[in-house]
Image 1 (cartoon, helix red, strand yellow):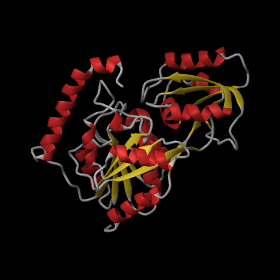
Image 2 (cartoon, rainbow, N blue to C red):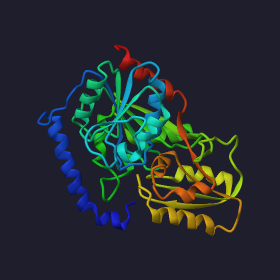
Image 3 (cartoon, one colour):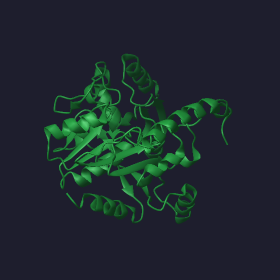
Image 4 (cartoon, rainbow, N blue to C red):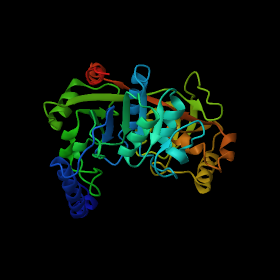
Length: 351
C-alpha cells in the first residue's frame, strides 16, 4: 500500500512518467535513432534511482572478461568536477572521473576506464584510442537509448523489486516498469544468502518476464575488513563492542546486517548517494566516534566511499582512528551463473 505522501505525489509521477513514455516512443518508432557501434556493447542499468548493486555486478563482468577480451568501461562519471570525455589514468581521482569508475581503475589492470556524459561520443573516443577494443561495458545505461547495446542487463533490488514500485517521485522508478521488457537479462540482486525455491518461484511468477528474457538471482558476499591506512586485510573479522558505519550510498542495509554479526552495537551515519565529504561531515564522524563510551570500537565505510574519502582535504584526523572498508562481490544462486556465462559466450562468440 502506498504512503500518504506517495499518493499525494501521484499526479507529478504521472507527468514525469508520460514524459519518459513519449521519449521512449520516439526511440521505438525511429524518430530518435539508436547508434550501433563496431564493438560489442553490454549495458548494465536499472529502472530505479539507484542502489541496485550495479558496481559489484560491473566488477563481476570485468573480472570474467578482462583476461579474454580487450575491455573498457564507460560511465557518465556522476559527481565528478570535470566535463566531456575523460580517460582514467594513474593520476585520476574520484573528483575527475567519479567514485565508481575510480574504483574500477584502482582494482583492475589492463582495462580502459572512461567517462563521458554523451555515451556515443565516449564510445567513439575509446575506439579512436584503442581500435581493437572487443567489449565496452556501459555502466548505468538502461535509460541511455542513443546507443543500441548488444546485451542489456537490468538489475533490481530483492527488497524493492521494480514491479512493486512506481515512477518518481511517488516511487523510485526512472520510467514506467513495463519498460523492463527492453532488457535481455533481469537480475534480482541482494537476495538472502539462502534463497528458497518457493521465493524464487513467487518472484518469477510475479515479474512475468517475456519469453526472450532470462531471470537470474544474486547475493552479496563480503570480502573482509581492509584498513584504510595501508590497505591491509584483516585475517578475520574484528569482534568489537561498537562499529560506527558511515556511508554515502543509496542502500546500506545489507552491509548493516553483515556488521551486526561483528559487534554489540551498530551506529549508522548516512549521507546522500555519491556524497562528497566536507569538513563538517568529517567532524560529525569524529564526534560520533568519540561519543561512544567504549575503547573497543572502530569506523567502517564502503569501498566506494573510500574513493571519495581519499580525496577529501579534511581527512587527516580520520587517519589516526581505526577505519576500515569492506569490499564486496556478487555470487549467483543455483545454475544462474552458468546461464549468464552462456549468454556472454553466445554474444562474444564472433570476436
